[in-house]
Amino acid sequence: MIEMQDVWKEYPNGTQALNGISVQIQKGEFVYVVGPSGAGKSTFIKLMYREVRPTRGHIFVNGFNIERLKDHKIPLLRRSIGVVFQDFKLLPKLTAAENVAFALEVIGLSHKQIRKRVREVLSQVGLEDKMDMLPSQLSGGEQQRVAVARSLANNPAVIIADEPTGNLDPDTSWGIMRLFQHINDRGTTIVMATHNREIVNSMRRRVIAIENGVIVRDEEKGYYGYDE
Amino acid sequence: MMSRIFRHLREGIKNVIRNGWMSFASMSAVIVTLAVLGFSLILTFNVAQMSTDVTSQLEFSAFLNVNATQQTGSAIAAQIKALPGVESVQVISKNEGLAQMKKELGSEMGDVLNAFKQNPLPIQLVVKPADPHQIDRIARQVEEIQGVATVRDPHQLAAAIFRTLAIVRDVGVVFVVALLITSMFLISNTIRITIFSRRREIEIMKLVGATNWFIRWPFIVEGMLIGLVGAVVPVLVLVYGYRSLYIRAKGVFSGLAFPLVQAGDLGVKLAVILLAIGLFIGLWGGVMSVRRFLRV
Image 1: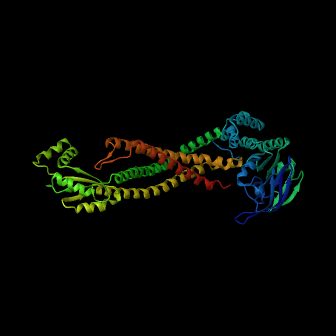
Image 2: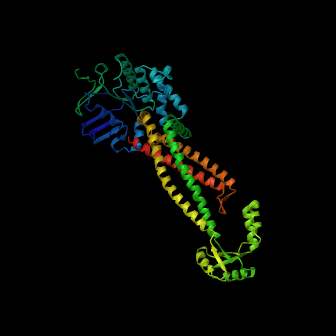
Image 3: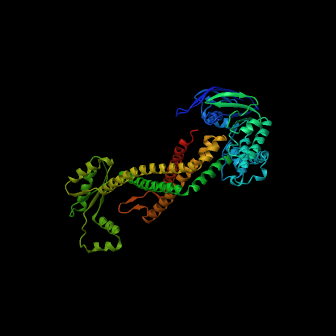
């Protein structure tokens, strides 16, 4: 599903973000990526949807060979991946339904298909009654649910989440985590970078810890493992 | 497919409207540019037509001494006809010349000519060379014939006008090129502002797997719309303006007896050229502005 072999990344400004990462993530896994700020988590996440290119090494995601991927094939890779961010990345002038529809319009589905799919995924995240509300009328947790619904719209094999609960209070965070759990139960692989100790320690999954650009720990049912 | 085309058109139109003032500024630039270009084109078309017209009917007049008789006139005409390269010589008698002059002056002014007791006009010989390029040589030879008072090339004036028009046209071309570059720059700047205001949308589009062309199209449509509107305005103004001028002048360039290019023909040509250029600079402005932004 996702495989990295000795991946290095040096940014043009000289920052050594990753120094030889090798990892395999199987289909259907739920993986936390933890580590101090600036340790390389974000770079690790961004490599998977080809937001950044590795300086060295091999990366395979959903059968795409990332370092050989032609620019015009990037959209195909991204359609097979759902991405969720800390700041939701919703369009403020579009309603919840339109925000989800936007992702489907982009890949050229018909209006009828779009309407059907939007309803499906919004009910999956429990927001079918708030379809026509603007992001500003929704709470933070609800906004993140819309973002999750959008990431699900294309039926991706993998969902990549970069600190999805970073802007949410603990209760809301748990709601989002249950949603991810639910999605994972249906067979979707989830890779989540997070700083949320409580969640990692109570919802025990595989934990990959990155420090100074290398994997220092990779445990099934691991712990967050950093003191405040 | 169709729904996608409509989507890009809709988004393009939205871009133009959202960015109202900048769009208006770039449209104005295109309008000014294409108006100047269109004006130069009208000039060029007419000059071109006049040039061919003149070369095809190039001829000159030789005037005999005032006291020369009709017989002398015929004799000299025969003499000229015998020169190499002369195609035809037409004799305009004193009376014919007078009648023609009266006609040209119109009924009121023509009466002035009645004041002359005697016909003041000399016999006129209109000489047409077989090859227009030989006209100067033949004119010089005719001038030396006994009994010929003066030789006048009626198109010397025309030639002077052509030269002036050609200069006007060349200056116009320089202007137009400068203006075209300015318009393109303005269009591309306008679109860049739209792109900037939509960068979040573009970012999300990329993340959810939009192709670069899908992202590009609305901005290219925006550019083409600006170019198109910028072309339609000068086309309407110039075609309408030329048409009314043409009708007023009855199809003839005043002073010189050269026919103007027909209004209908010119209108179509002008419209096609200006619209094509408008679309092209809009398209180019669009492509240029999106190019930098779409590096993933």
